[in-house]
Structures are given as structure tokens and as C-alpha cells.
Image (cartoon, rainbow, N blue to C red; front, side, top):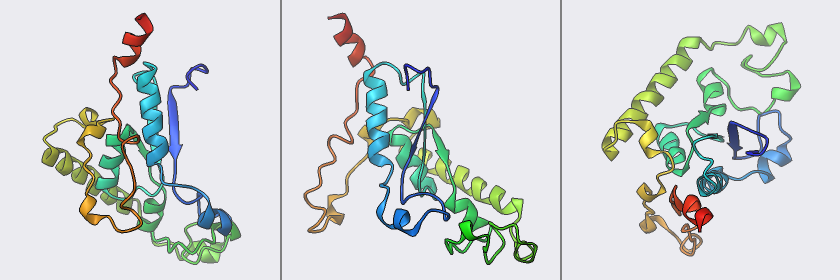
Length: 190
């Protein structure tokens, strides 16, 4: 992507896309975006490209904590989908592709569209909540600017007390490795 002069890369994760996705994709495809996001951040920094390419992430981001977590792993921009639909009244019936959304969110049927009760103010309220929550979390972390936490995996703490028999053996060290921005330049001149 860097050779093609891309200025944005989107890391999209979670469970297989929109409500219009086949049930098998929703159940059996996709992973959380954290792994791809971390690897993208590390690769861009290692190759001296991070300042040239913006990294956007999406995939079940719903809360200010989700935004902060993704920023720590390297994202500077964020995409929201499911949360917006819920705010507008979607019941997640997974019928988007059938033109039969029971609450009128994803349909062209006039009878069903009449049931839509969403308002733009609901989305405004949601994003105001998100922005306020992100600001509060940043302040709790001791930061004033959002940009100061992007890619700061050194600030992530693993709470091993919450591990169980299945998760006790997980190793996050590769995912949380913070690449020094000058590392590539030092090796290149040697």
C-alpha cells in the first residue's frame, strides 16, 4: 500500500460485516481488529512510514474505552457501524438484505419505513458522549491531546487476575511490542 502511495489504511475486524452478511460469515469469519492493527502500526513505524499513512480501525467499537484501546494500538481514526444503528433503533434482526427491517432502518418498503423512529439528534448525543468519555479517559491517563497516545502500547497493562484456564497461557508480548520510530533509520545507515 505504501508503494501505491496510499495515505489511509483501514483495519476492519470483528464478526464478518453488516447485518446483510450471510449467517455463516457472522458466526465463523473475522477476528477482533487488535492483532491486525498492532501489526500494521509496528510495520509502518519500522519502515519509517507511520507519519505518511493514517490508520483507521473499525469492528464493534462502541464505547470511549474501545476508542482509547484502539488508539493505544495505533489507530488515529475510527469507524462505527453497529453502534450507530442501535442508536437509531435497529434491533439487529440481521434482515438488512431482505428489505424487511422490522423497525424501518434498512428497507425501501414504505410501510416498514414508516416505523422508523430514529433522529439525527440521537447520533449527535452518542458522539458527544463518545467525545466526552474519550476526553475523560485521556485526562485520567494524564494526557491532554489524543495524538499523544496513538501507538503507545507501553501504556497497556494486562490484568492477569482476570485470566482463566483458557486464557492463562496467552502471550501478548508481540502484539504489545512498541517499535522505536528511529529503529529503521539506524539500521538503514549501518
